[in-house]
Length: 253
Image 1 (cartoon, rainbow, N blue to C red):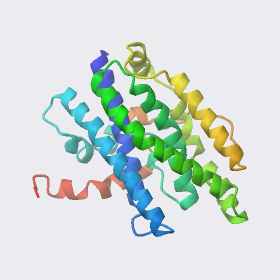
Image 2: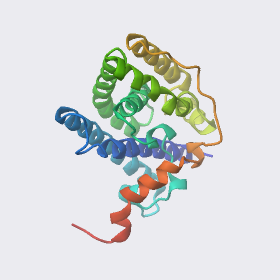
Image 3: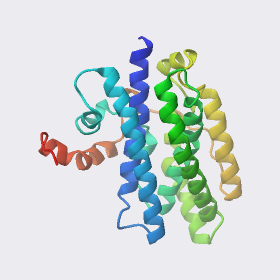
């Protein structure tokens, strides 16, 4: 593969992950435990959808096959999606939602920080803008993990129960495939080992403050989002998210 093919794949991974996480957060609309939290979740979700548009627009330009960012978002099937397995998992209770968001944010920020120094000017520009948003996302989700983990007996119990629900999906946050390694060698993407170290350090810091145990590193299993092998949850989410554009593919408003 050449760098452009690898870059398209990487842009899809970034865009798809942001889009699916944003969609998950938007499912809390009208259901969040407090009005302030609902507004905060929607703001984070909108930030992520905006970031997804930027990554997918760049991917569409490089693909140059007459598809737009909207086409990539709404007219691809599950097997064509490249989002992290973590973000497609159901929201569960508020402990699961917050833990998912924190684990994603703790990875997302060092990735974007590295990308802001990319040799690809377009990538660097998108990442530099997103860093400002995700810095807030991580601060907020980290504070909530601490608040729930070191809060009441019930909140602590729920956080302990949330960890095994999502931890195994963190395996993709700390490893790279050959495609990502080639982009790193070309100076386009950050070093995965550095990202993994930053993620691990942040997780250990926040979990210690939250009086939560840090599990052993997750291991690969039979699913692999980089190859389009997702959990059953993604197909259901896409069916909901893509219904209107697929039902009325040429509609404008």
